[in-house]
Image (cartoon, rainbow, N blue to C red):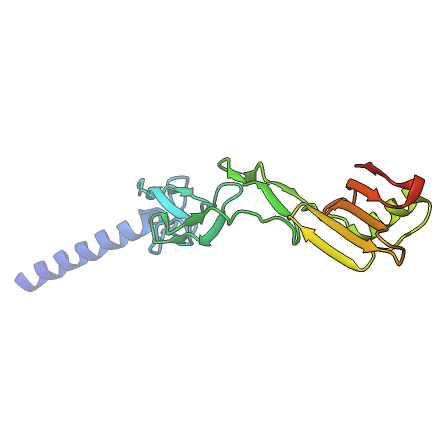
Length: 222
């Protein structure tokens, strides 16, 4: 009797299981049983935050932030290297220390000079960007003059002939004028001849003249 009862219970269990298999629908999101609520499995790798350039001149104003699904873009700033003001020379250029430019060395250039052979009348001055105001001039060179030749020509013009400086001749130069003096005794007894002429050392102009003993042609001038 007990054995028969056990068989009936087992049979009922089998029938119940078979009925569930026959009447239960397919599993949700399985092949052939998908709807709009079914999504594929998402796999995402590690995301490195974007960063500003590490090149010279670049700094980070605000780093990138994680906003749940991605990083924001960082805020970057670029600083151009400084240069010397107009007119100055660069003795040492600026270099980047990782956060700013340092080390720039600017100097005033040496003042200009006058061309070779010229005199500086006014020295240049620095106005903050350039040397200005220099004035140069060519030095005055006195003309090549010969005071003796100047006097010779003048005396010849005054007398109408060149008598010569005679035997007793003297020359005196005071730094400004050269004076030529001659005293001559002719063969005739007590006949005296005298000539004097002064001429400028710088211009050759005759500055003094006197003759005696040359007849009607004698005279004075200057």
